[in-house]
Length: 177
Image (cartoon, rainbow, N blue to C red; front, top):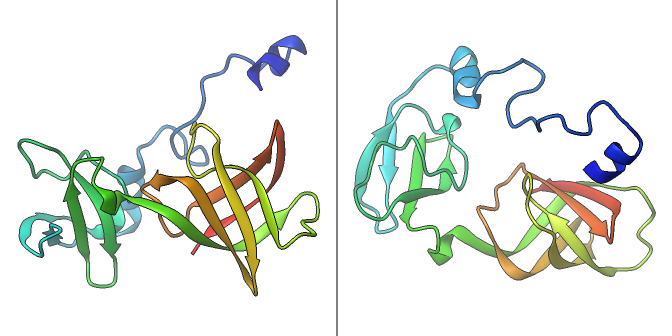
């Protein structure tokens, strides 16, 4: 879309993309959260159920995060799951670990720009910033939608947004359950 901005001489055509908390200025997510949520030591548990380290609060981490865990040596660990209520991080070794990937997800709070009249729809989707389009099938299931991806997706997390596209048009989006 930047080419359209350049073509129309828009001032943001070459502006750097924001990856921070744009509503509070240039600040890292963890730094922002530390101002709002207290540190609380919790366990880091690997895929075999072993406590392999400690963290300062599960709320400071994201699914798929690799850096800042302060555990390691060798193949890096990734956050695979969070239990915020019990302040536990679950991690797995290696980005290619199948635990890090999901083929399907459920959505709620779905908003369609154009009405979706069919019960299933084939299009592409993105679940993260700057991700390449991912082919998927959307099926309506009572009060939510089931999204099935052709290729498993890395680090799918509850609360993330999903945006659907058909060619260069945004169809709508929703929130992962």
